Amino acid sequence: MKINERLFPTIIIVSFVLFLILAILLGFRPVHGGDQSSAVPASFMLALLGGGAL
Image (cartoon, rainbow, N blue to C red; front, top):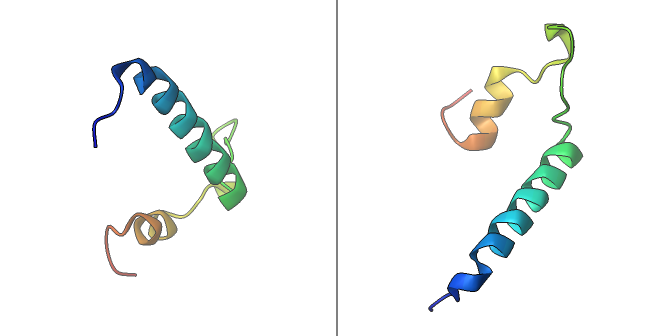
């Protein structure tokens, strides 16, 4: 399937927005001030990304 080159910017922006919304819905929020108590644990990130066993 060939994708029209004019659609590349639109595809990139739409995919970025969709992943941003998905991340917010999953609970990934910006952490201000360096407080690590509310940060997402690394083990959860690895499990979510399929990067290793728990």
